[in-house]
Image: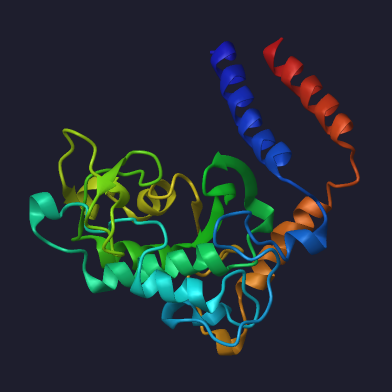
Length: 265
């Protein structure tokens, strides 16, 4: 039992230090004005004269351009097929479910508030991603409820699809798009994910973390005329990170090693 408790504690510590050492800076200004290093993002956030439909809340301080937001709604930036279950169900994704995914996409492309959660990633189309951003439970529940009767064939959309050449891309030309894994069965979101928390945390490979509304959390969408409520949430977490910035990386590592040795031995 003692060994099992020690192993569990070690795993929890490793997870905590993945966040500490994965975090790219403790500089508050950078954390609070961060655009991902990815294909369609601007280098730094700034105002836009206009953004399109579900992306409009971010126009006062945005990591995306108007052209990118139009493609989110009218085209497809990544040739991603939301109707990947048509071959089994003959049903397209509902407009309400798709609306929430567009809001999610707008957040990904436009939000300047993801600095505290940015980690490095090696993909052809991005060098950074965000990991475990706290999404407000009410926003997550609304998203899941809108998609509960829609269909998918896998829980992790970032990792489990097969990407094959297709002539059915929105541009009308051949491209690579996502197909259901071989042998998979299309089921409703409710059957695949069971609940909202499981959905939000799994669909984009832990990009989101389900968080009670009573705690600092991110809004997937908001009324931009009243300001961006996610600014305050980002500040809360950025100050928490900046508060530990006085310790050097070597000192943090030494402390971590001492604690790990204490658990193991």
